[in-house]
Image 1 (cartoon, rainbow, N blue to C red):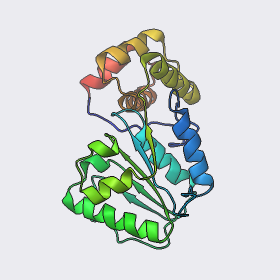
Image 2: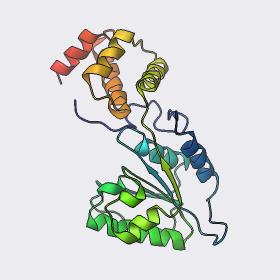
Image 3: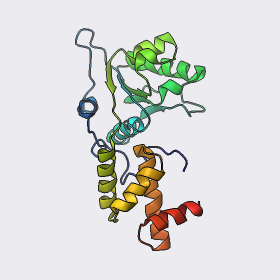
Image 4: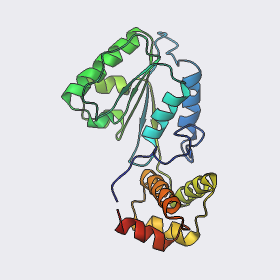
Length: 227
């Protein structure tokens, strides 16, 4: 099974409410404040950036996409490691969102630095995410220092009971029955990070609807044989 991103397969798309906070409540509370009003340095009045970091499956992209959705269509700058031709900085952006900063090549680092400087000048909020804490990022010094200048949160990956709870809740929202046997199979035979599990549930649900069959281990095996 190919590796899949966290925000796929979530009914209604990523939001702060459908993110299972678990041990990450401080980051969620901070982002709600971040969306309500810019967080500034009381001494300088400058808008402080926010940086989220953690291992694959902790929900970094989910939270960035949730923040983007919460801004309700207002223009934002989005930059990730797959960006081929990033746009020029736009003064009309209400926020700058940077994902997977640890994977930026030299060209993207230059774009990110340019966006960061312009955002600071225009008092535009920056929300970024990466796999490592700022001090450990193998990025140019001026970009790395800016990423660590404001609020930094380490996101924790969900443990198995928490992953089961999220899967169960998502299945309930979809109106599908997910037996303990099927969940055990999903957790032992496939990638255990929540992003892959949520996309697997999305694929299983679609295949069950297409074939008009109940979700069983046999159905999952048949789906994989026909993949």
